[in-house]
Image (cartoon, rainbow, N blue to C red; front, top):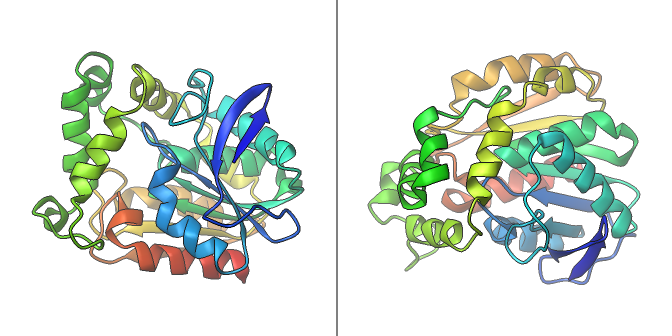
Length: 268
């Protein structure tokens, strides 16, 4: 469906079911250089298990109009505005990578709007290597190749797929290539610049689940500990699940495990 968010058209995938704000709302926020389609499996699962799903293309991504927002704070404001546009009073927020930072900031600044929080492939801060930042600005194809190398396990890079007949790395390369010029560079710069993650985590008042890919090279499990430690001491508390046989792109590599973990956390 299409919504007007802050005066600009935004595309929102609802998981194949009409959106009904009377149901528990799950808002899924994609990562850098991506769009709603990274959540297709999870969105459909949630929509067919009693949730009202909002999986938007962030501004300037996918089928949403506008230009990419340049800070995590601005993206968090946009997410809250999306809830207003959908007439959803409260929602469980689920974010992947950059989207996890957006979800974290939105939950900290609008605690009355967020019921539960799921951070997928998340660390705070989230520094981005300078070679990747430079490639995103100047050599998109090289940046896409780096991201594929670091996001997927060797099994997936050799052709293993949870969706028979589909190349996960090929699909991800096509997804990144269809985004507009400058989108990936803007997103990565926003991640790299944001230093408010641990302060935001300390203010979280709802239960939080962190999902970590067992073989994640971009946000490895050891790097998650500072964020987890703060969230575990927050008012809402936190727990962590390591998703086996998956890397940073765990929604594609382990779709059932990720969907089940999100569904159980949001519904508990």
